[in-house]
Length: 306
Length: 255
Image 1 (spheres, rainbow over the protein chains, first blue to last red):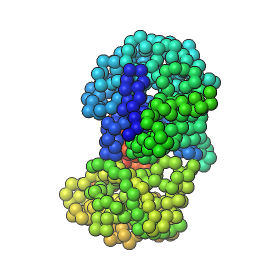
Image 2 (image 1 turned 90 degrees about the vertical axis):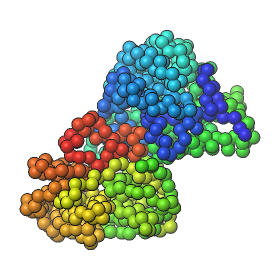
Image 3 (image 1 turned 60 degrees about the vertical axis):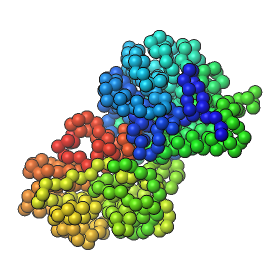
């Protein structure tokens, strides 16, 4: 029997497979397909202070080995979340993490204070990397000064596990990971989607109403893996790897690059059972290769090459 | 109704014409009760161009044979791949997805309106209504006579009225040009087809105060309410076509 358990900060995860925000709803959408409690953790749909209608249709375009989205953080706001969604998720026996987003610094602080009071929510994923909103989001995560400020201020009001979700749309993502570490974040997760676009040559219009959107899926995996590797070498806090993970092999690559945990995202749209399959697959892989603990392969290539 | 993810076996791949084919899928497990208007998400053989599943409405169900039929229009790489599937091959689907057409009041005079590929859910709906004691009529519109889909199947349900854009069969024009809509008043219309057609039908129903439901088609990634890509603008804000629809009362939509 191999040990899949890991810790990020003080929080224990029964296994290192987490579902990515915006690809797993609030968990209940998957109850017909899997036992949600068997996951290491779930990260709920991005939540904002006020309700958001999101961007106009079309918000999605299939692209080679991936997809672009421009949902724009559609959600019913924190009041609705507390009243109607939070009670429903309290039955899950796994780490439930809320992804928070703001247009202004004050939004992030207020959200962190509100979420802190929710006993069942064990962590925040601070989203400073959404590419699909006009204000806030990626604007915070692509400027070192504003990134530092928002992380610092949220850290002051939120003493539970704080994960900062990083944008890949920067020159050097490791700089932003260092800022997160310096300001006391417990972990960084990366990558959010890559800014991209697509044009329909028949209609002669952009495929998305917002023209640009966030690229996800296997198309981004080599870029994501490279960034996770760079960040894992730059910081001591645990790194959560995200980006085009479609199967066990993809997940193993991220662990070997230095990720302590991974998030499964777009793959859940195509196979809603994939996250659980990956947990089983990791166990089998480790057993086959003679490992007894997932931690033995975290950052393996760094150790091998140093 | 619990959603499932299952492998089905292709029983038949029947060519209707150059653009359309019907896939008859046989389930390994007993089918749950399916409702007209619901759809499935089909896993197309993986390739760079066919990354996401393809949503297809349920065209017909045969509980005795334990089969589901899907009417497919060849529109791109995904549907082209589906058109080449052979009997015996496996197709993975997530189903049943979405809501369904509502059952009209007793003795309602019902018209089903379909345009092109939009006739797909109306066969299942028509059979369902008939088995529940209704006598629905069907109005179908196609570009020309070569593109007419399964006329006899629909004629077995009730009166079929036909339009073609070039007049090669039935009345010339669009479905909303058909004389039956001037000569007769129906109590309930359900409609599926191109957006412009559904808008015209909705306009007719508003003008004549007829209860009307439309089945929408939107680009979607998941099909079960997670990706929030298939939104439609409604009086209650943006809703997902995949879980709040695909069937909507025309009064709930923002036209």
